[in-house]
Length: 289
Ligand code: KIV
Image 1 (tube, rainbow, N blue to C red):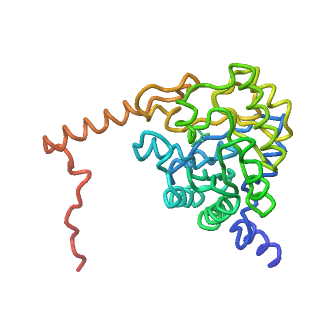
Image 2: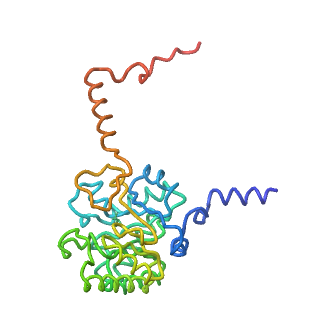
Image 3: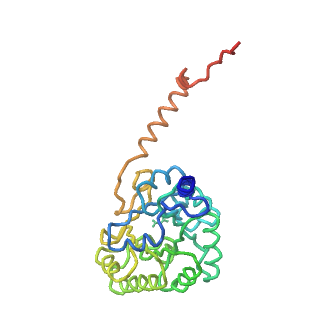
């Protein structure tokens, strides 16, 4: 009896081993061609808790540089930022696979640089994988990492870290040469050992062709339902981010006006001394005799 109880207690507390509930990179890889893989970005504890019940994979994306830190692009994200937020997301989830983005400049110089920084992200956050952007030119690095225990998610098509060389955030692969180059990227990253590949900002026929051509799941963002899974930036689909949204962002909620109304009412009540009213104030306790 004791043994059975302690077995289940150990299982529930996950002591010493990864929690059995959490998805693995193999679970994600095996989902190719099946029920679409549900992914969203998460940067903070509470958002991670809410997403964890519904998502297969949460990405601590370097989009946080723009969404949380107000930067103009993702290039300003750095390792300490990605690690801090990765820790918050891992700490606050038990179900979804957690992938942390490698920030710009932390992996492009060499496979060794990528390994040092990828291993640091994994050690310090407890995440299960890292993501990096790039195609054929990054294949050697992807192989180097995966052969040394760092699972890699690729990211091809529109690559936000290459905004300055690609000339903006435009969808890609509209002419044959560019479409073929993106297909080559997909093949190279899949063959190098990535367990899944984010395909961003490409037309439906190209996304379908890539998905059919490679053995690992494609996770689309602006790449149609032809992909094996989907990802969006959570704050975009919640209606929290400001400004013009890309065509592919479906507004599942409109949270900003709710927050604005709440803050407006709070400010009015504070100025009118209506808040805090008696319900929200500690009254003097009567001392017991
Ligand atoms: O950084 C990010 O949020 C991403 C997703 C948009 C795929 O890379």
